[in-house]
Image (tube, rainbow, N blue to C red; front, side):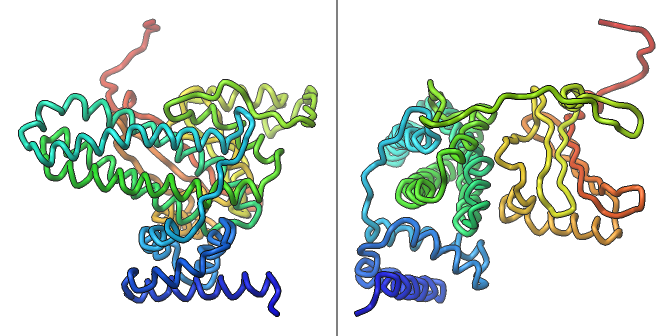
Length: 397
């Protein structure tokens, strides 16, 4: 008689074989019955391991992402829905689940409106104001995804869970793209384009919520400790919440809070500053700073009042490659490799972001001997600088 471990291993190999069949073009309908039988007794951790092993064995995360809609539909039928866990107020997982319930309220209204517009084309202009407000509300989903990407995913990666996080981030970007397309089509009065983008957005956002509930949250609760959940929750307020704000912080019953001690002055190359002074100085600079060390791990970011790009404590110690969506990793690796080799010392980009011109620069950090010690990212809103003309020689407040 085979052991439970043998059964899990056989099921996992069979599941991977079926995903490969889908990848090769076999119709999902032909696999549904077999898939349903295999998933009987499977848990969320097995599904997550499946994705990770496919990536570890050479299937690009982008390919697993492309397959996700196909096998997610099969998972929905085969993977038993676990009862919602009882979690204390303020627990980050409880917040994710609450946001999914609120998301579905907005998605239901979006479906009602798109169905009505499909039957009554003349109603498009009359419903435009309501649709605009609804899409603005749905844009809060961005905060939900940012907390996953910057707080939850780093904690899972430190535990060796990488595949599901890479796949999910890629799907987040797809969903963002569909919402952006829907808003653009609505603003341009392009009815058919709007209906197509809005319906696709609703379908994919619902599928992601389902995968969070059936795979991500159960796996995360099984994998992470209370102390890790406290760290995940600590950065939530910096990023923000979607459609509600938790009224309590998650505090495990036996948590012991450490007392902060005053720091001595640090001797720098041209002076000495206490840790508090150094932190104040860095957070008051009119730029956003992020430092990645020679091992490609994020070691610091400046937490100013108005950051251009969101950052949260979860990224500290995270590999820089995991701090970017899959489509951007190649560019990140090219910059880092050119800095490490000494071929380049800087790279720069600029983009228009919500009416602001954002200037992003990367600098190779080298010590006195010229050895590579990391990368400094500097982001700045230069809209005001770009608009300067003439001179100002006198104080004018």
